[in-house]
Length: 571
Image (tube, rainbow, N blue to C red; front, side, top):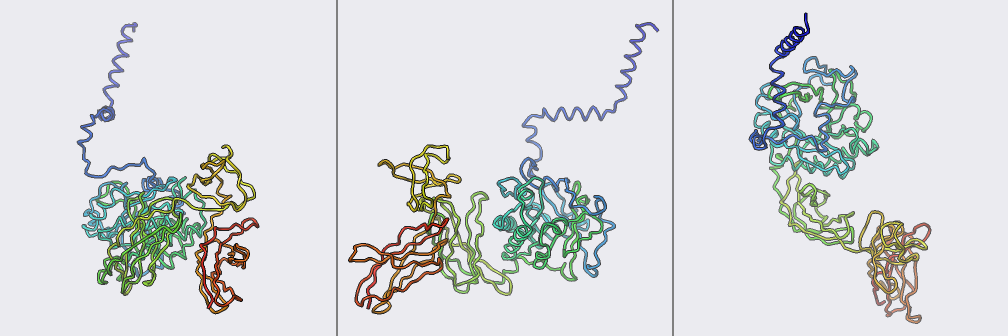
């Protein structure tokens, strides 16, 4: 064959091969190219009635809830996922009703709840919220939470809700409980509210290096908060975490457990009431995989709702109280309110701007307690508070409407004393900054701000008022006492003062008219002592006193400022 015919034959073969490529390959390639070029307006015309599912944030659910399941969730069968059929239930549940359920989040997309109910699913735990796994750990709502709770209940599915936690402190667990409680207000909740406690690889809980004691206390704090609100709390964790990272028996002795163990026959020896046995379940009405669960209900338990605030309707709600507040110092706010007859106690709430709602910070179980001091606040910062009155009867609770809102600004300055022999004041918050002056031990300083590990202070040097910086470790903050004096007899006067937090003791001085100055008369060596009787005095004479507290730091006494002078006349 000559060169001309060989070339022609090759071209014919190429054309024949191209014609054999399936049409759908071309269609797929064309769609992918076209998708990149869809005009912005055309994309906007697509269905936007459902919230957008985004995994670009720090939602810990984008791991396990999207199918990236850590090995500790699986059974001993090498990671074989359990199916709805062939489950082996522990003999301890003989005689129990075994009820099928699911748990869902935004990653399950739009759900046909009527189809779910018709497929035999009787309960569902809906994710309504989560804490981000990043450093800041911001709280966020699951965009599908509300619609899932509403539609599931409408279809006759029993509904509970959960928060995907990343709490690393008791306070964060309480915050998460409040956030979850707010998310379910107005919805028909008939199952427990759940603390989903699990790691996200490299996330804040995973890297926090908490002790088992700390992790357990976090779970208990959440449960206590949920129970106080009238709901049934439930702790979710996988077998590995329950066995190795928590004191699970301590939790299960007070609250139910939801075990996650992806196997056909769990060998978890601890107590549990719910079992999540697979993340690969299929249910009519849900596109793709879904977590499947069983609930081991004692006979009769499945026909009643778990404890919810709805049961508290029979309790008459108490009247609201009147709230007032004031700054107690640079880092404390003191709240007081009117006592309400018939109350069981009071719940104190503080506004959290980061989540846009009021969070419960204290539950007071005494009707006679009508004040609370909120400590650990920031200097020169305004805080908003409310209080609710609650009443309990037969295990049910009813809450009043919120009190009036009070705004309180903490003090913008505080005083302290230098606690070292020679301390350098810098021009900036760094040891590399220039020196302004040097201060001696027990020199008083006025602190006007905080910059990391440094105090910003107002200081007079060279005849001029300047701003300086000093390491926090070189300043002791100790408040001066408030003194009162009273004559007890012709030769005795009793002094009383308030207990100062952190004080090692107190120094009492009495004015000596002959010397024309105050003279030390007594050193109290216990910070818990709050009174002293000065005896051996002259009848019918007036005596003037003042007192200061002290704290022993590195073997040196660091004194507060003196109290205001107080006088009393013997009988």
